[in-house]
Length: 114
Image (cartoon, rainbow, N blue to C red; front, side, top):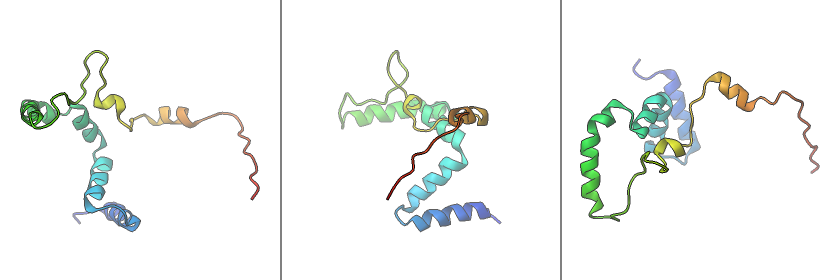
């Protein structure tokens, strides 16, 4: 079959939320399915982005005349931030993730009264 059962379930569960359109669902699938490529494209490290960089620069230069001339996309230059510096998701190994969430001591939770 062309579409795996897990993919069908993903779209079914997403559709049940009822507040997201097809574009958001597709974006979620692409993000989850090809995470490393997605990040590489966003950071400019993917080979397709590198090949298209001259066209991207030309497109930005042409578009800047119609918009705010000072508007630029931050790139790593000295103290300036890049997309990867502010990206909300970080890829970590399973071992590193365990270290982030493991406390190694008992936790006392307060009893909440209604």
